[in-house]
Image (tube, rainbow, N blue to C red; front, side):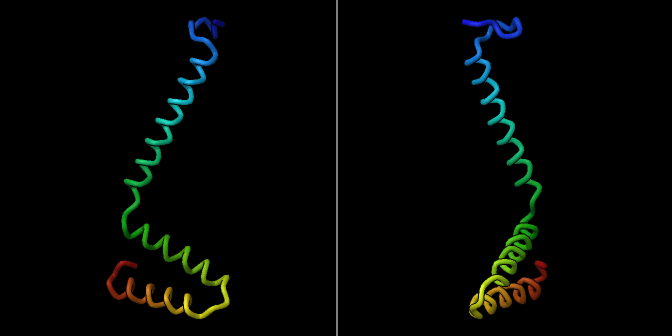
Amino acid sequence: MKQVHGLGYGLTERNKMIGMLGTIGLAAAKTLVVSLLTEKMVLKLTLTLLEWAVDRTSNEVDNHLVKMMREQLQKTGVI
């Protein structure tokens, strides 16, 4: 087995460790981001994405549904 920078680990063991630390780091970042987002923020983002998608279609049904959703969220004080 090859020595890597005098650490005594082979290349495959080191790559596995780096991969595992990367996975742990991504999971921690995801948990942090999700915990920082409030329900209100998620609803606003969802509404924004829906409005963006609706603007790119030609039917009126989805326009009406998103408009009703926005009105209800405004009425309840969410946005």
